[in-house]
Amino acid sequence: MFAGIDVRLAQALLDRGLVSTERLEAAAREHEVTKERTSKILVRNGFVRQKDMIEAIKDVRPDLLYEEAVIVPEIPADVLIQTRTMVVADSVDRIYVASLSSPAVVRASLAPFIEGRPVSFVPALPQRLDAYMQDLRKAERSDRGVLEKLFRDAMHKKASDIHILPREKTYTVMQRRFGVMHLVHEGTLEEYTITVSRIKDMARMDMAERRRPQDGALSFEFNGRVIDMRVASVPTTDGERIVIRILDPDSINPRLDELGITRVAEWRRATSRPDGLCLICGPTGSGKTTTLNATLREMSFFERSIYTAEDPVEYRLAYAGQVSMNQGIGLDFAGAVKNFMRADPDVIVVGEIRDIETARNALKAAETGHLVIATLHTGSILGAVGRLRDIGVEAYELKHLLRGVMVQRLVRSLCNHCGGKGCKHCDFSRYGGRTIVSEVAYLKNEKEVQKVIDGEPSWQTITENAIEKAETGETDMAEVKRVFGAEVD
Image 1 (cartoon, rainbow, N blue to C red):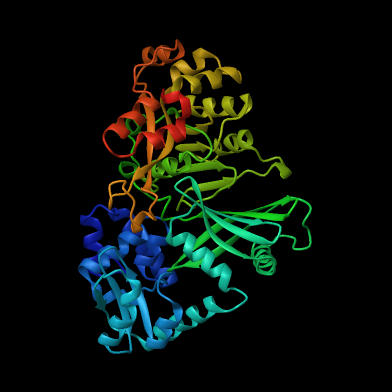
Image 2 (cartoon, rainbow, N blue to C red):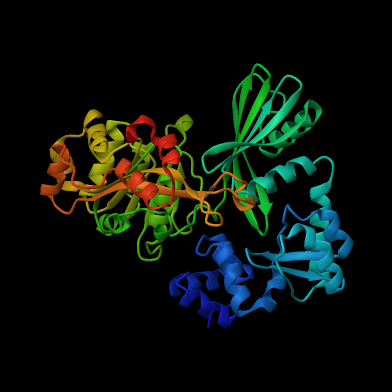
């Protein structure tokens, strides 16, 4: 049916609504050129999340799992090396391995590290096992061991950032998980020097410069996919503080329905319009980029021409024209939007409306038959309109063009395993993820836009939505107060 992918697997992906026929066809065409597996191309292009692909393979063609490989931080490398065992998939209820040792030996060796999960075996290819053993040994090498473990532990615990802090006699590593910092490692200053030098080398930063802030980027392979990381150095009195932002494509590739947006149907109605302006608002770290990407991924990349202006581009969208802003050469949001207008666009994404020139170009694009989606750093729908008015946009301009506004924040959700009591699954933090609290307005006509301009709300506010989620048990009031402070009183 489609080149480079098993027929049953392709049908399972279609039946589960994980991918469309046109995206499967596009991946199959790419396979004909690159000869990569179509399933791998689907994951790389962001059409299917890797964990969803593994689940589909596990359910319909488990024998194909031998083509996969993952490294699980909880299982010591020496245990896998001694038993010549490769972990091919790690799910909540089972672990899949390929091994040249007897099943009884493998199960006994893994038992202390897999929390009672059963072990299933798939065929073992000697050449795949050899490559996996090399990866394990490389991860354990003294000059890279600490860094590899820091990266893999952060990925496994779904951290968004890694902070490396030099101190007077030691150094500290912290992870930001679900918006909150956690201390995960303490080491010697000698180890700090080696680790920071390695990071700066990989990120192509000036290793000799320690007095000025620097930015860089690096890539890290984790369980069959490439993870991009953005690196920033901050010169402090104790030495360089290194902050690494983890740009995991799997974490940025959810469906809109999975984000927790209470009135997501209203947002879909706004972004389904062929033209006009839609705004996603919220402070830094509120998940705007995730929502934006989830919105764009629901659009057909093959029927609509999509361009984005970002500062910088963080996550790749297959078939979209993504442009990073570069002030050094005079490329800013306003100039990018102006350029897009000459490139046959259907949808234009503006990373942030900061000034009147950008706003004017965005409104001009919306007025001439294009859908424009932009972000603003405001905390309410009324505040979004007020912000545009403050930078010089007139009310009559918005009245004809504004289609919808969503304002969002992220709050931690209670752990599904313990219901917020604290368990090993949530590191006894009581929280197991994050969900969006939001206020959304779809403005279907000029009359409804005018009400917003006049300051007449007709929607549930973001704080009301947060309190509602606490009352229904998705989160709790302690978390709502942590995020909103006295505003919820």
